[in-house]
Length: 203
Image (cartoon, rainbow, N blue to C red; front, side, top):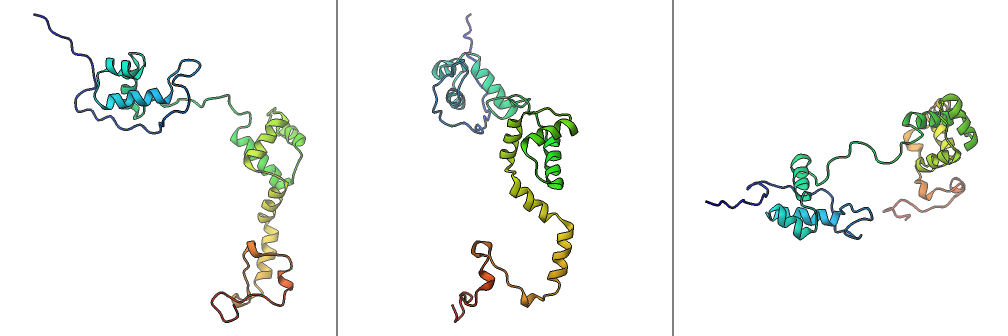
C-alpha cells in the first residue's frame, strides 16, 4: 500500500500577519552578493498568504527551498519577514552621547572654541582622541554654531533673567505690546503711524 507524502505547507487556519515595511523594489531582484531583495521576500510572502506549499512557493518566487520556511518562521516568531537586528550596523561612533553632552555644556558655559581646540579639550578632559572632521560632522549634525550657542547661553543666564524680571515688573498688562517676530524690525518702535487691529475702523 503506497501512501503519497503531502508537501509541507503552513498549518490550516494559520493567520500570517501583513509585513511591516516592504514596498515594490526599484533595484534588481538580487543584489551583487546574492542576498534577497525586498521584492523576492514580498512575493514569497504573498504566495504563503495564498496557501501554496513551500515547494511551489520557492519555484514561483525564484528563491531557494529553505527560504519559505525561514520567512514563515520569522513571521510567526517575530511578526516580520526578517529577524530583529541584535546590534547596530556600521562602525561604532567615536563620540559617545556623554562626550557630546560634555562638549556642548563646555561650549555653553565657557564660550565658543574652534575645532582644533575642541579636539584638544576632548583629549585632555575626556581622554577621547578624535579628528577635526569628526568634530565638524558632530557640529553639523547637531546644528551647533557660534550664533546658536551665544543665544542659548544668553537665554540660560540667570543674571539676565533677574534683570528682565525686574524691568518687566514696572509695567502692567495693558502697557505691554507683543509683536510677532516675523513682522518685527528694529525701527518699529520709532514709527508714529501703523495699521490698526484687524476688524477695527482704523484698519
